[in-house]
Length: 116
Image 1 (spheres, rainbow, N blue to C red):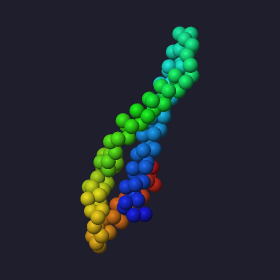
Image 2 (cartoon, rainbow, N blue to C red):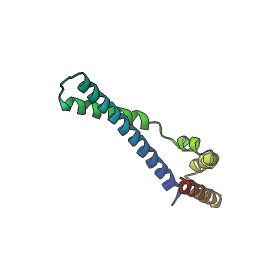
Image 3 (tube, rainbow, N blue to C red):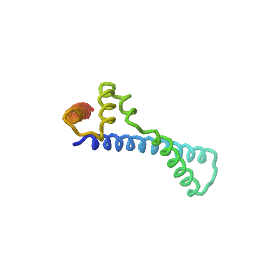
Image 4 (cartoon, one colour):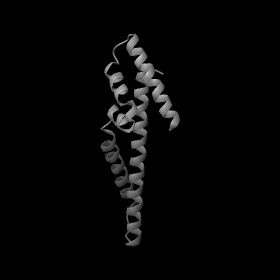
């Protein structure tokens, strides 16, 4: 696994988490609206509820996922902070020093992934 692949994987995992959060928020909203309508004996078309749910999901996912950067992962894993920052800054370089840095980043990331 290369460092670029690690950054792509981190980004993919970030989007997965934000997708789940958006799904759960939308589900809570839809079920709450449905319960409120049931308690109030209000009759409605299911397409309205589906439209509200879909628009809520899309807006929530957009708002949650637009702020991705490596800093998000660095904040959660302070041990990798400086190493990740340096690796990201040197993605375009290929020499012995950067290769050893990338190998260190990969080994630390694997250790963190195994602990999780």
